Amino acid sequence: MNISTHHTVDDLPSDQRQTLETILGRKLETKQHLFILACSPDVIPDTAAKEAAHDRIAATLDKAHEHALSQSVNAEEADSVVNEAMDDVRRRS
Image 1 (tube, rainbow, N blue to C red):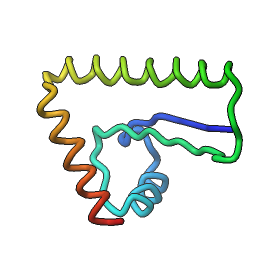
Image 2 (image 1 turned 120 degrees about the vertical axis):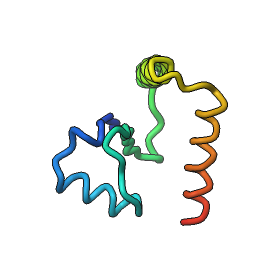
Image 3 (image 1 turned 180 degrees about the vertical axis):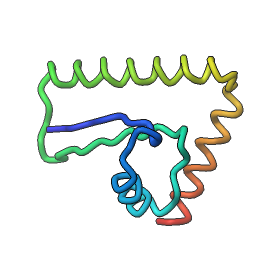
């Protein structure tokens, strides 16, 4: 069974924010969004669960795309941010 949630850092109580910063190993910025997923890798979801997950992911990506457009973020800038985050994760692994 998978559990997922989405939060804006600014909306988190300070104790929860501090806990997440400890887990992530870095400070979070106020405007950042958190997508948290807990999953059980040994459980194979049925077709309905897969379709529901697909719909939620598609809706999340649509919302992220709309937000990027509203902030005038182009694909090159978005790729740069993702690459920077991936480099950070690799350094910490």
